[in-house]
Image (cartoon, rainbow, N blue to C red):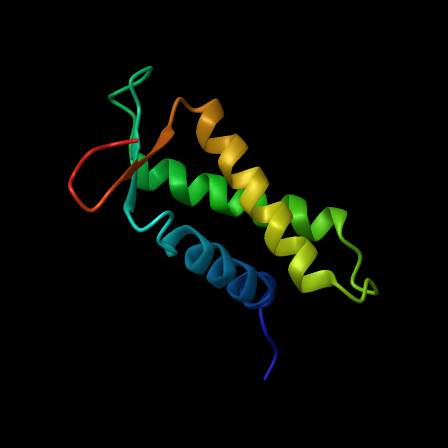
Length: 104
C-alpha cells in the first residue's frame, strides 16, 4: 500500500512529538508547570504549543543528521530548546507551582 506524503511526514514526526510531550509533562522541582502570557494575554496557548512543537521538530530534523549515533538524544534536547525559544518569542513564560500552590 502506497503512503501519501502527509502520512510519511506524520510518521517521521510521531516519535519526536512524543519525546517533546514527555519532556514537557515531566514535573519540574516537584511542582506543576503552566504557561502565562502577560505580553499577549489573548493568545491561544494550545495553538502556540502546537505550532512551536511542529517548528521545533522540523528544525531538529534538519540540523541533526540521521547518521549521528546520538541522534535521538540530540534531537530531543534541540527540540526542547527550540520549543522554549518559540514559546518565549510569543510572550509565554513557564510558571512552576510548588505543592503549596505558590508560583516560582
